[in-house]
Image (cartoon, rainbow, N blue to C red; front, top):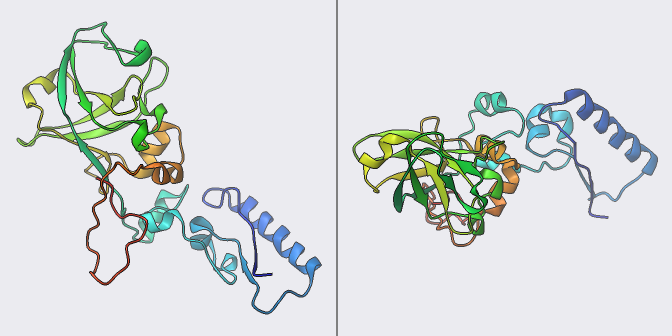
Length: 239
């Protein structure tokens, strides 16, 4: 027997349930009795690891923590000085003028409430973007951060259905005058550069873990601040 482990249901938010589940695990270990000397006990992922050393046992499982976040506890992320390690950027490849009442995307799930400009971004569900990221009549959807070379910036909602290879973002009436050389940040690694990983995931109706592992092979990876003799982990930045 190499190890015995369990998962906590909500270590980031529910301290009482986490303590209760831990007590149940310890009670089970008492009933099991003697284990092999090299058998490892581990119960803590990122949230429980930072919650209490009582949960550390022989091993801990740092999951979302390596990306700079404590699940369910943004205050702990800041308190520990964790820094977001992942950003995901793209660009606008086309801008199209819409009139109020025009519908966008498959199924016409979003209707322009005013005259506006729509930017097309070459990222879709084939790249791991959640199909639920787009705003519809009954859901606000996720927002991206858009920057023009002249310094113009906007927080633009993803609107309509997420297609296989592209999304539409609402640039507003001012979008037309900015040209198409616009940088789009879907997941930002700083407070002034778009939604954080947890924020974008929440707005899309998925977990941060699901969003991270779903980023597809077509998305180019760029690794930064990595010593040349250090092995590459899963990814440090998706661009």
